[in-house]
Amino acid sequence: MAARFASSKPPSFFLLGAKVTPFGRAYFSTSIVGESPVLVRDFIHAALYDPEHGYFSQRSGSVGVLDRSIKFNQLEGRKAYMKHLDAIYKQSDTSWFTPVELFKPWYAHGIGEAILRTANLSVPLKIYEIGGGSGTCAKGVMDYLKLNAPTRVYDNMTYISVEISSSLAKKQIETVGEVDSHLKKFKVECRDAADPNGWGIEQQPCWVIMLEVLDNLPHDLIYSKNQVSSWMEVWVENKCDRSELSELYKPLGDPLITSCMEILDLAKDGTTHGSMAGSVARNILAKIFPRPRRCWLPTGCLKLLQVLHGALPKMSLIASDFSFLPDVRVHGERAPLVTSKKDGKSKDHNNYLDAKGDADIFFPTDFLLLERMDHYCSGWSKPHEDNSKSKKGKKRRTLMLDTSSFMEEFGLPLKTRTKDGYNPMLDDFKNTKFYLSVPTHNIK
Ligand SMILES: C[S@@+](CC[C@H](N)C(=O)[O-])C[C@H]1O[C@@H](n2cnc3c(N)ncnc32)[C@H](O)[C@@H]1O
Image (cartoon, rainbow, N blue to C red; front, top):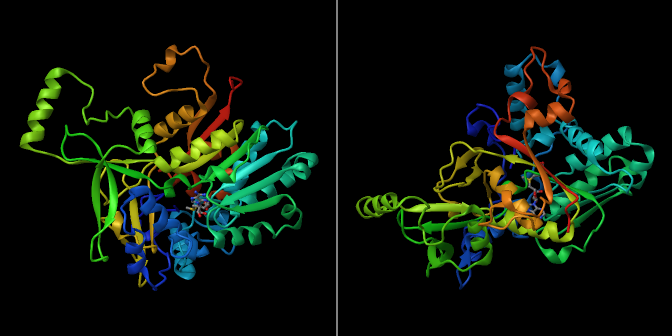
């Protein structure tokens, strides 16, 4: 999550803040894994969301909140902005600031405008937000609609926040409650959005907002010992002395992992498509210079999309997240950053097994894969099918935009411009994107 290295600043500058809660961490990390090994995604889920010890559960401060909006127009330029940011980080000593927080209220207003411009306003507007953090997006979107939408649209709208962390759920009610009239329309459901049991079926059109949520969703890991060996699922086990975690490799069997591999077109036996000569060369290379392969799979995102498409078949989706993360130390394709803060210093870890509830684990989002998973979950595309020849029409229309393009289209970028023209909302955050996905008429 967070405003991490949205610009060229070194990560440590942005990685200020996560509080360390000292008790029981070492025990927690190994107690996540009991007698039986768990899949990597279950380990990550517990490290981030365990109700008692998880990174997001204990501290509402895991999502930083600014006391007041930054007055960009009064800052001279980039240097002044960086100085201001540095001071805020030092004062707050909490955690990261996400873009919706740094650029409040303008970032959320851009999202409100995107919804207003594209929603079918003949039905009451229903917005779901997943992982709303401190509630800044919810408040900003509702403020915007109150001021800019026809009165009946605001009066009849509902905004439902689905938040896994009880401390953040409470914080959201406080934030949105700053405006009395919002409260009647706002509800927080404290639950895991990826659990299908929490949802009914909503047949009406609705919106789903997810800002910096995909990066913190559990992922799985597959491993192959060289360039040609079969992929194996990675599980985490507790070494017998209960103080050390290690990896265990099992043959593929988990349905989410195999679906994800199919969508990625990853051959299960570890081979890659190509010529016979290429395959012979790879076999020889694998014998002489065996190179282990590790590949992270966004199985948490796949599960969430499956659940959302099942529960909200006419949803329109707005998601924003990191398309790329620099200085990642953990190995593997699409590997996460694992960061913690101790004694005022940020630390990037080499191993995800170091996460003990005091560390954030966040992944880059492969937006093309996200689009494939979205089409797959909508029921349009099947892996191994040439969709261009499919008679069935696409069920989703999708669009990927850089944050700057999104904000130029829907936001008010002048509000985040400094005196010399530098605009952090447009000029930084080059490593983040927006994904928009709306239903087409081919819903059968
Ligand atoms: C990095 S924070 C982003 C917060 C906010 N969207 C923002 O941009 O400031 C991720 C948020 O997603 C929530 N979250 C993560 N997984 C979730 C899940 N499965 N269901 C509901 N909320 C979830 C976390 O508790 C947290 O509020």
